[in-house]
Length: 114
Length: 117
Image (cartoon, rainbow over all chains, first blue to last red; front, side, top):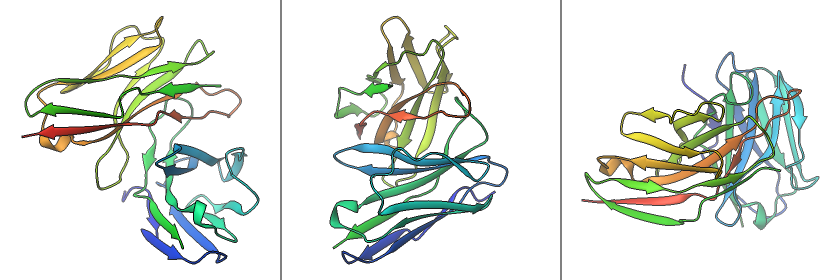
């Protein structure tokens, strides 16, 4: 398996624009997670899915953020409208199961909002 | 709520020597999992080692081992025979067991490890 695949690797956009980040989890993994990494706040869990259903979105910072998982092999994280404070690295990760299962991370998307 | 604290923002070690990275955590759970993840400059997060809290024996993976002190809620990572490729950010993390399908992995802020040749 190719691992968790994220696209794009880098995204530069202007304030107010819509940004869509994409993720393909490892086949067979039931859990998918979206994390955001910044220098100030470290790694924060934004939302996670189990069998394509959002389980906990309490980490989503505000209504400008939304995430979907239309099928087991694809998820998106959308920011609309984007703001400079959204600049961060966004990671997608997937795992087989619960609790102590190993997370497999994608390479992340470096987002810069000017 | 779980918290994970890494008190050393940066550490350095000479190649071939041993270094220990500190981590403390706080949880009300009686059972949980602890992890160390490595993030090299490539940005990819890679699992280094995992410990199940109900197991008293410290986990080891080749040159990597942990010192798990459950009563003290301490989970340090020891890297023996350090190599240049060990240079990275290291994140300690804690996760509760599954409870009704709701579980979260909480990360510390990380320790940047430099390996000097």
